[in-house]
Length: 395
Image (tube, rainbow, N blue to C red; front, side):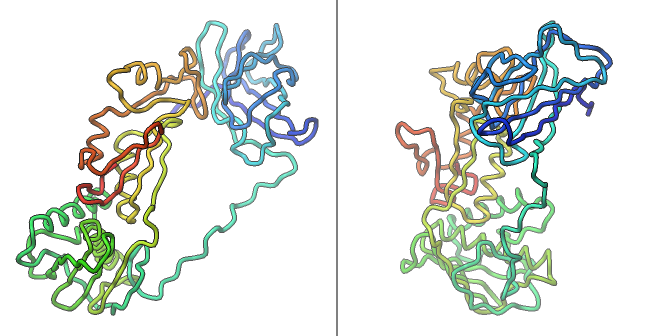
């Protein structure tokens, strides 16, 4: 990848203004002098006083978009740098990411060229390793499980089956549920041996699936013996969580046999403590390809989260196809230096866009909307992962 011909270094100093000031240094690493240019940078820390700048001329600000020009007649020679300062900030900078997130130059002939940016240096502060936020995880039992179930009375065995397969008499819904978890596992762990199988295996262990009306819908109980495993579940979602637990157990025992083992007897019982266990993804500010969204939803399903909060629209962009209003996903998704929507956080000289077609969204929701719901007048879309009718890829 070719290096940028220009680099912007920035520092924050608490002196000179209630919220301090930025000092920028633009380095010309190219072989040619430039003049009559402007520099654009995007930053979380906004400039709200356009007159509070030194050795620069304020041109424009739009949200996180900032544009400045050098003094009239200024020429930036090869190997030289231009230093300018900006005060009138809306808040103090507190982190190395509070400076420029992206930058580009608009040259005198109208061309836009990228500028590399460095982390913000904060005067008077020392960069230190981040603090340890969580203690080291320790297990009392050698089982590969996340999240940890409510109750485990299981005894680890010295060996594990090649796979678990449905016992004779399994219903078509049971087979489909097993197939769903096999598909989820294969997408997440392409190179690993699948822990579940639809066909019997002489080295495997039979799996009995039984609905239990005494259990709530998301609850399940696993009973282990050397010959078979029984999964009792409250509803289809509990069955999926139980199958996912079995896949975690067996995959962990196979991948790290010195650390994890598979139960030979006893029980595991689980039901979620909270009915809403979700993850938020903001695609309005930064677009993520469909494959990335699908993988995130698979990861949520693997850890038994049940809500995917898909933040599809905001003032930065509109990401959902509405056929009656095509400009929402033509004009309304593209950020560019020459477009009606200027670059924002992380956007540079190249136009960026992207949206999800109605078919993209339907493909992420196999229940075809039966379990998915939008709040009227709201920007958010969500669904319950693992509900009856939804698979691990439901959105």
